[in-house]
Length: 151
Image (cartoon, rainbow, N blue to C red; front, side):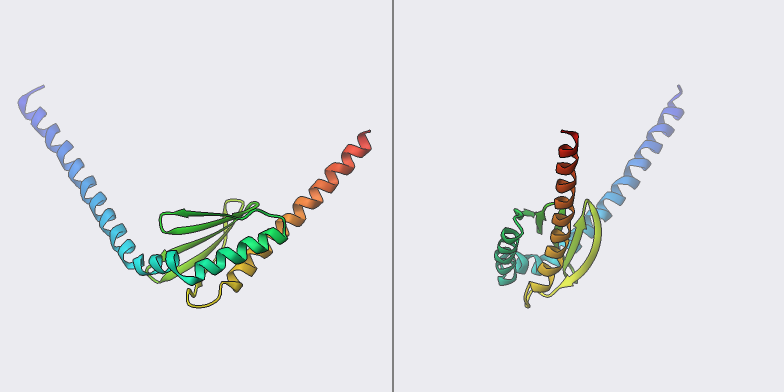
């Protein structure tokens, strides 16, 4: 390989690295801007009265349905898990979004008013859990009937 061929290959490699580096930097800058824009909402979500009331009511409602509700903070996102249903409160630049997830699939998304009551959000999510519990109970009864028939 000649000196010129080697030089040309090195220049192509450097151009490829620079282009990818610029794209990475632009993506990081955009992520940083989004994080900074969402920071006030994230702080309000983490320390606000809305979250405290939501956690208390979700625990109480889960107990009534005989369902353990798990709370997890993932970065600035609050995740509530119950049965196969999930509710994520995600801070964005426009406010906090409630994302309802069933079986790993996003069902719906709506904006949350952190100054208001968590009742509407909780009622929607508990309805999803209640429906899941009903299906689970029906499957348990069917399985018990199938076992009784086998004996």
